[in-house]
Length: 387
Ligand code: SAH
Image 1 (cartoon, rainbow, N blue to C red):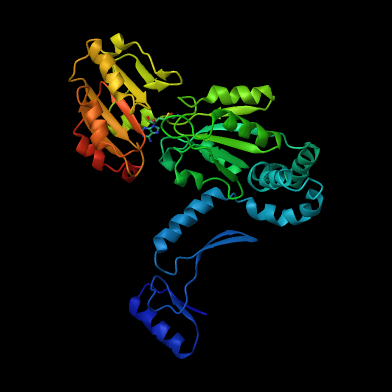
Image 2 (cartoon, rainbow, N blue to C red; image 1 turned 120 degrees about the horizontal axis):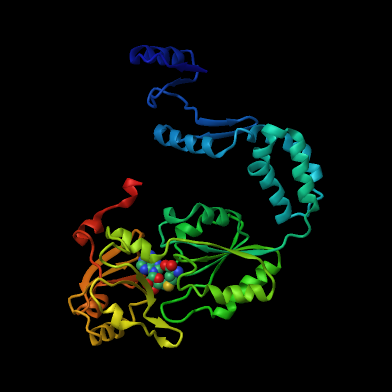
């Protein structure tokens, strides 16, 4: 093999010519045209090697991926891989499936890299022993807020949960980009609910959580936004508690936070509103009753979830309680997603704007607030560019 890396274009060219003449494969650094072969970038955790190749099209991309992998793969991974061979046989005493997978995950990615550098091989035997002593895995449920749709608005905890899930039970509001982050072997169950009433009855969702957890699975119950906001979380928790199934809650970014952020405003502001209401226009009993008199006052801010179909009712109640028809209202459709839309309107025009402008996505109604600057500005801002 010949490598030409003199940093002198003409000399490199000569070398390439000589090599070609002698029928020796040649690589001219950073010169795809003159190269007969290219070498991928590598991340070296000997004996583990990760090679990154872009066929010479984008060396900068390869460098980025390499930097990312260097960061995420512990330097202990090499030694651990070498030692793993000696543990293969012993690990077979751990039941096949999730339990054994857990051991190896711990070995390579968690306890292993943490303990090996200081405690040496003894630590690895210790890890094995712990896993051998664990009885059949008990299932549990992680209630995870998936945020408003942009996968970058997931919490690290949410990502980790998805990474470990055996079963992911998700709502319609959860985007496919987020579902793609689930562990490849995870079973995905769509219990999508449409605007009015669930398409999968709540009892059935409760039963699914229970059924899979009792089988020993780590169930991720993935809900749009934050699972504690209009998520019928308590009903699902009740069902788990009835079977003594452990659970925990991972908060997410709720639609109100995502929507207000896209229009450069605050949910609360000194001198304007010292409280903010998260409300729904519709509940199990029908139209939801609210303290309309307070909401009708100037300076009040409220985020209305599932408000599209009850807009006329909300408008009527507010006007009846003395609200100004010119009260500013901002509608944010599909907040944080690629197809996000912002509509600026007033109380008087709310139903008309909803009917004529929105296109059937998830809409959050921000009552009493307009974008800080023109809506057009926020419409065209791509926040990811600044991330
Ligand atoms: N738990 C969710 C809310 C579920 S109720 C959360 O915390 O965001 C469903 C309602 O949430 C929708 O009708 C809509 O009003 C709102 N919503 C959810 N995601 C949204 C998004 N990306 N953009 C705008 N509104 C959204």
